Length: 245
Image 1 (spheres, one colour):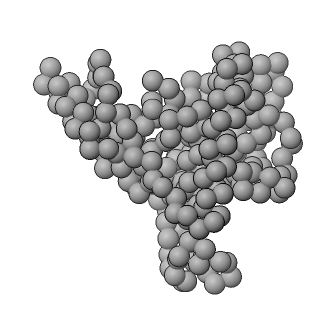
Image 2 (image 1 turned 180 degrees about the vertical axis):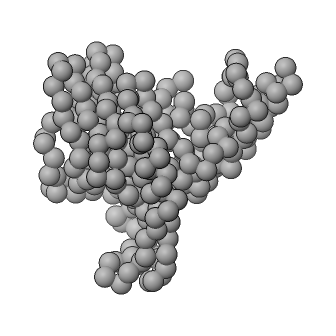
């Protein structure tokens, strides 16, 4: 199972109101999730007429909730050098590559999966696409569908780079053939959206999943996230087996 499907499994079996993901090479600050949760559940946005909310079909003077809270982070490279990743413009690099204000260094992009997602995002839009650029694809899909994304301007996580990191390994680094193919598909999605096409949701498909062991099945439940009917049936079956074992 690749990274995207691992995250989809977590989404599909989560009972939580909010979801985040931390890779094995992530070191979050002690209050990272607390600060994200306070922002997610205590902050809202008003669709003021000074901005073009009509782009997403929003009525003016409405109060809408934040869907995703991101943070800045520090990237610690294999050679020990450090880079503070804080350029919000990196989030729109697939739409406006001419608007970059970053360092130009690899890895200088705001992390998506370490954000805190309102779980209802996955009900409305499904989960991750099964590809290497799954974070990038989901980020773009949420932006194109008008979800409100908030960036906390503070470093709340350190990310460590290793020889076997996906972004370093030859078969999956930033210039690998697999990533080039993923980016081409993502850019095609944007081109279709710019021509007026609706953005398709990505139902979670885990219909062939085999779960060998669940340590605490009472903590899990099949979520309301958008998934294929066969996936829902399969997960319910697997979870029932774990609870009655």
